[in-house]
Image: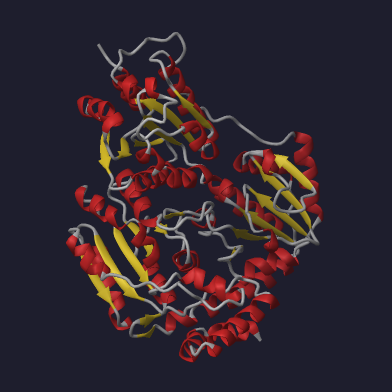
Length: 578
């Protein structure tokens, strides 16, 4: 007779799960054995459960389907939490199996006891513990339903003793349902929105990830309105390509052109975005927001009109009501500014840098040039995000994921594991910081164990680069941001991965080409300029003062060489500051 572990596996199979990312052990062993006996689900033995949660989140984001990870009693499932926070905030449908101590030991401060209800409450839409065999299938079905339809994490606490009990048939559903309803504003609201769009002549459309499926409709609307199109980092790969009116990103990693366009507009249309950086939002124009989750409307900007709807459904119904704007002067002015911004961005591409101080912009542009048309990129939080966001361009087939909402370090490499497993045959490139890669270095072995042809590009600036910048603009001398790294290429070789070190910019293109063409996993350890800065699209006076203050403090502390290096490394920004 089937036990609860068998029932779990069968329900996961029926829900479309192809693999479980986990470290097996004690309370999870019956589940492990059920997976082995069933045969169609792959057990991915990660080295750290956090990496498994990241990988599951990446798989869910890339495929748009449900993914699964698991952790055993206490420490095992506690390790999941950072990756689950990231998945939940990224809208990734993930079911997490948190196996626990035997149910009869609850409340006794037993070995490895944790309270999963408290532990996962803040990073899940569904979070329950089954204590009887009859409860379990109902909870699992409900958890999967929540993950699929609310787009986030569901956690099922599963006591180890329960997994070996006989499965119980239930009278409620064990199948899952993931229908897609038509969601758009009422006809009255659409008429109001069309009236606003037809009245205003200087309009910027700002797209978030919620507009990802509406590329063609966004382009069509922008051309009818002669409006510009800006976008968030998460939306770049879906909105930038084949879009003649796009003016780039805004936000901490964005470009002056998008910021300028939004602030020169008399109407800003926010589509499917929960963009968090309120200082980058204009305050003196009319703002309209469309979002499928109405509870988000108005919490990031002073919105005057807020409408609930799926972006694609909404624009499909809206377009017939919008008339052609014949005045393209605003659009032309913004596109001209954008052209200048893109020209300025080439400065550090044309100037490759020097030995052990290679310009990271040059490296990112090479990756953009050499990567396939449908490559999947993962980017570490920090400077790697900056270079990826500014220099990796969309094609309509490429994807890029990172820890964009949770903002955690160490995400790129484990996310690449999930992407490579979910999309065999597609090129997967992880843009890693030296700090991020160091955190989960052990899971390089997972890449080797499953022979995943992941390409890891290490932007090795020997520092926590983004933290260093944060300290400097706050007027603080950077301290304890330096990294004393191992030889990452040698570490990769020890793990069974092709390892290449690049210290001379003249060698970079050939090394990257060699790694990308290699039939198997490869790591390229590139010594980038530790003083390269990523200035935001609008440089505030306070940041200029802060940078000057931090440079003064460095000089007073006898670190004049570092001050000169920073100035020389960032000559492009001088004209922005003056």
